[in-house]
Length: 178
Image (tube, rainbow, N blue to C red; front, top):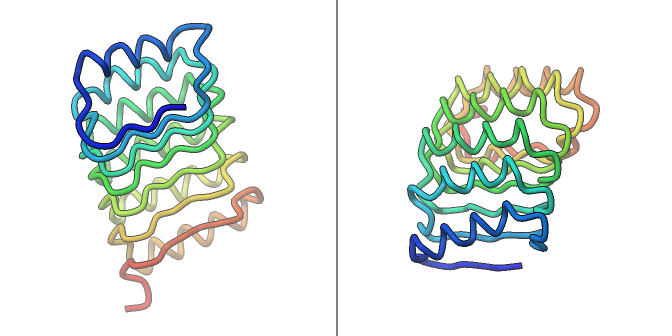
């Protein structure tokens, strides 16, 4: 499976997205990091709606912002094969986190979600806490370094009274207990 570091030519990225949509696509893992996708996140999100082979998608440090996060989260409503998604070190904000929370309520394949260092704040944490009450597949969630406060950490902990599948919840480097 391909690993791309640094800039990727937009035409090459389009070809990659088209390949992901083909029935004969053999990729199970795709790693794209280092500000390589920029506006290509929308094409990738559309491809994920169709793709049925990808299990792991690593999109760390790609300057993905709110609109890109919303598109990606929307694709999770259709994709039933992606198991691990890492979008750490981006800037999806609270609105992006809320979009992922909504997707988690319906997605039945994702077992690992890394939102580390995305500035999701309190509103994003609350939305994710609510989605954890419904989601029964996610086992790993990294919310470290996201400006989460005490009350939101408590809401996440409370959701674990209902959710019995999440095994790892990372909240390091937040404003908890300060």
